[in-house]
Amino acid sequence: MVCHVFCTSYKIFFAHAHSQLREMGRNWVANQLRMQQEMEAKQDGGNYNAYNHFVKGK
Amino acid sequence: MEMKNKQLNSVLVKPSGPDCNLGCTYCFYLEKADLYHQQKVHRMDEDTLEELILQVMEQSGPEVSFGWQGGEPTLMGLDFFRKVIELQQKYGYGKTVGNGLQTNGLLLNEEWADFLKEYNWLVGLSLDGPEHIHDHYRLTQAGKPSWEIISKNAKMLLDKGVATNVLSCLTDYSADHIEEIYQHHKQMGFDFMQFIPVVETDKENPRQAASFSLSPEKYGKVLCKLWDLWVNDFKNGAPTTSIRHFESVFHTYVGIPSPECTLQKECGVYTVIEHNGDVYSCDFFVDPKWKLGNIKEGKLINMLNSRKQTQFGCMKSKLPRKCKSCAYLKHCFGGCTKDRIKDPKDNGMPRFLYFL
Image (cartoon, rainbow over all chains, first blue to last red; front, top):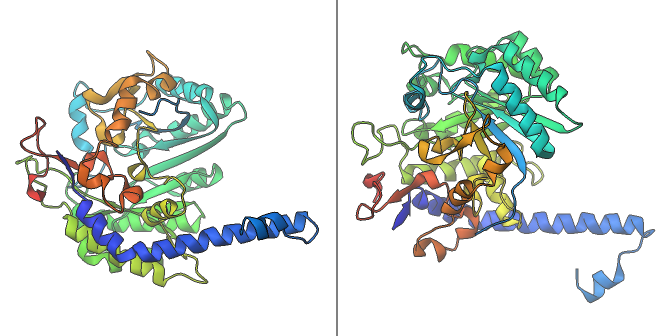
């Protein structure tokens, strides 16, 4: 049986910061996707990729 | 068990072994001098340095980093590091090379700073905070305070534009002053901060933690407070300071493996090279059990991919059932192997029974 010295501290921290971290993570991923779509739009001459946008729901 | 070959991307080198001009109460590395007790002074010679750099350059990918650490690596003198650059250029083969110097800052001067700036080195400066915190445990070998000269040298590095990351050890004492430490670092102009929790066994009684060690509860509170300070400083949703641990954890929230080995599923992705060329699994496991060989007798890449190093890396993923059902497992993966304790009823020697 092995225990982790910092298990308690990590749990205290995650109980405090998990929801903020999750929200920040979601925002970051959404931003990355938006930037990617903007890049694609520039490459396509101003149109979003319709298949990704409407069919795949991205 | 992961069998894919690991690339040689980084090495941690200890050119002056465990030798140091400070005698910090909590240092875990000073006692490594016992492993090399034949010599009083430990210094990497030029042949060993050349063999090391030749091997790393030949066996690494297109980008490779050298971490120069100790002990105190500046004890080698600046000419040693000029030789490092000369050899990296000689055997570079067009590769991109990064150098990091982890130092207590005591011996730095303008000549050092100019060199570090010229070759784009990243300096990790050990500074625990304002004077009363830093000098609580970070004393010279003669027991004298070190804050004044180190904070002066820190300013000199920052003024000269040397990329500098401040590293602070968190102890039973400093943990009570985390806001003061954070504000101190910000006021000094440090944008990059790293905090390391100190947990060591008591030398008199190895079944319990040393008095300066941080308790899990205290460390938990420190992380929460630091998190709030960090987030409160955000501008337009982005951090204004960098705290390594939080950024490493953040990776795990966007599906990217954390760059910090303690938060990865398995470890053993780098090796440590001692002053005489001996190679070990990890900085915290410089121990005969985890000696992988010597660079004069074998190839670093083979040691990195050896059965012993793979076994070392896999040790991290062997977790108790409680861990496996934890909601936060994918964000910490059980932390660092060195911070684990064995049940006293188990075969191994128990560590930190105090916490059980």
